[in-house]
Amino acid sequence: MPLPPPGTSLYFIALIPPTPFFEEAQALKEYFRDQYQSKASLNSPPHITLHMPFQWKEAKEEKLVKALSDFSFRKKSFSVSFNNFSCFAPKVIYIDIRPSESLNALQHELHRLCKTELNLFNAQYRDLPFHPHLTLAFRDLKKELFPKAWQEFEEKKFSGDFMIDKITLLKHDGKHWKVFHDFHF
Image 1 (tube, one colour):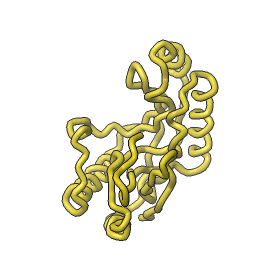
Image 2 (spheres, helix red, strand yellow; image 1 turned 180 degrees about the vertical axis):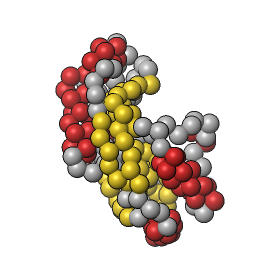
Image 3 (cartoon, rainbow, N blue to C red; image 1 turned 90 degrees about the vertical axis):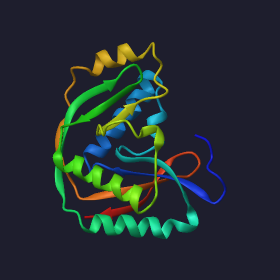
Image 4 (spheres, rainbow, N blue to C red; image 1 turned 45 degrees about the horizontal axis):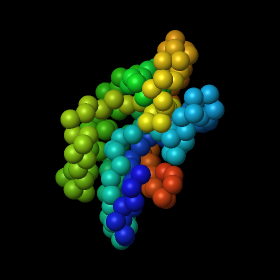
């Protein structure tokens, strides 16, 4: 990942699943590292992306934190369900999320806040619909290993419900994404 300009850092906004799902997803990421040499997903904690990575001036972190705090203060918790495994062939395997009006509304409202109040734009993702998922293997999963990995996970089950009661701002430290701040509902 290229380094941002001096005085700027990379951030993104996500949902991080609670225990035991966090640990189960982490173990699956490690499995993909060990069995399929796909380790890129280990650069971040297990998460569902709400807003893709963006650059932000560190001197203005307080403004970012305040906007996200004000946003989350007005939200109410809701339940989300895992729905087995799926893929974006030929590189990505993930834990799927059951469709949720509440989750779609949260992402839509957050996206609007990021554009209108924080002036954040991710042009390269503008035309992609929101497809909530938890990535296990992606950009470094070799195309020749994808069919074997997908055959192993295509019929596997992964289910469970958990409450969404916060959003998380992650910050890149130059090597990994780290939790920077949680914003509870």
